[in-house]
Image 1 (cartoon, rainbow, N blue to C red):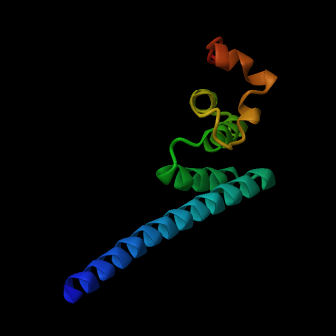
Image 2: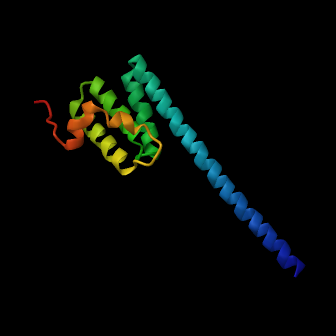
Length: 127
């Protein structure tokens, strides 16, 4: 009976440790994604659009559902005069922000007045 209790305790401790390790790994990944986003935003503000695009895409590899990443990608494409890609990224940002209204993301930027035509689907590509 003692051996059984000993192994049961070891098993429970092992399970708790595994959950803790998973949680820590998740937090590390979130911090890494935030680092990519902050780097991308900094590059964007300095006009280094290629580097900004690379960093956003790195962050999107693990977090496709973040509207602020898609919005920043849209801004990057907009500055690079890649209108079709910019519109696609903005539309994706709007869709995600509407799906995830209760999340703590910067959806206010996606819902600003200049984005209303995109939200309504009332936009046209340039010829």
